[in-house]
Image 1 (cartoon, helix red, strand yellow):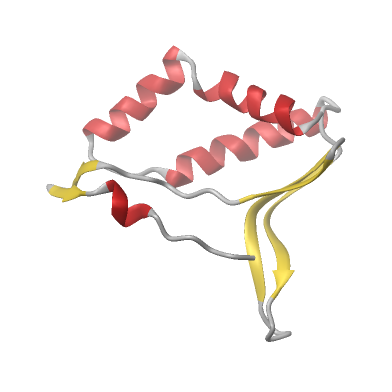
Image 2 (tube, helix red, strand yellow; image 1 turned 90 degrees about the vertical axis):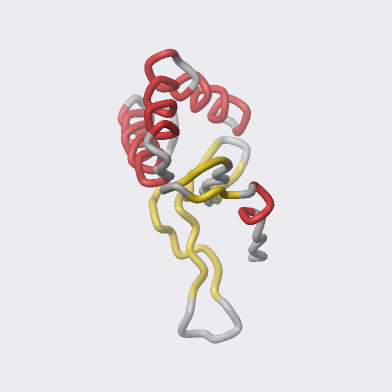
Length: 114
């Protein structure tokens, strides 16, 4: 599998009436659910490896060593694909009301450099 196929398959899984109904329920409950998305990806990646669609993958992958040799930066997922390795880090961009408080989308943009 290559990058484009992987992301298309992820879209196919999450952009369905059933999956979007779950996301709407999370929105109505005013909650972020990054863990649900990660859990679904764990299941998808295991399924795709078992089906021979991907060669290897890991979660909470120690991706890059920092200047301090004792510390590593982690990626949520590492996936070996036909067109190269993919380091995938997930972040929730929440906008609207959460627990009764307005959350502006601009507060979600913090960038990390590896």
